[in-house]
Image (tube, rainbow, N blue to C red; front, side):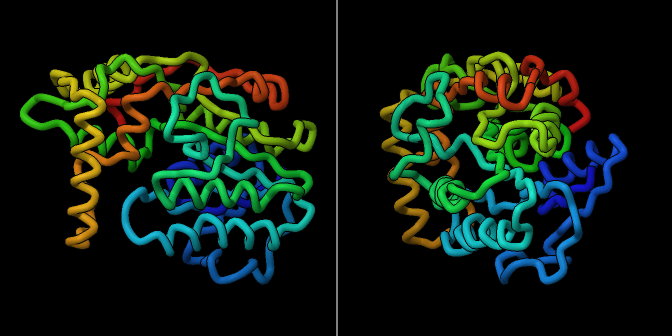
Length: 295
């Protein structure tokens, strides 16, 4: 196989690049230094069998314009640069409705018309932009974790204060998490022209209560914490007030509690994997933080 990978130095893109190279595939890594995909299609794209579009702006706080340029305009330019080529677009489970629980969601339940962040809204718009493009696979992972993680683990560690971690809700909300190895495996399966184009949820095989997952993750990192519950209604009120104050003062960093975080931590966010099992032959393992000490 010959593939191109956008965002080849990012968390997901770098993992895909390594895994493909390990299989003996020819990999063209496309980084921002080589192609700013917000400026237009690549002038001289390599000849490949598939392109993995992993580049994205993942920030859930800050000015919306750069996020939209990266996630929507960038996706359009990738599609234009590789016409007819199998396109594997790394989307997100954040395209599901953030205002209601996601309970073993099927792919047809998203995108929706309401979102809490430019990130989710722009990723949903990118999916819509690819509607009707043949030979396209859209993957929707949720809460990707593992070696190289620059988002999930740092946020969890940064939220620990005085040996305690305040958690919106009671910690029992079920979650579908996605180990980077499982996402990488699904991505390489999706590059195969024998697999079925379409949209697929991608996650670990099992679902886990968020409180148990956080305890296990932090324990694997050698961090002992007490989980403290913050009622969802109270957390939402605090987050709304904080977000308003942060925006008025134009602070670049997000408040410690946001409505987006609450929507993911206090509500069930689980995904059906039926389509991926049948369409891609996806066979993930269970959620595991056994290697967390090395992240």
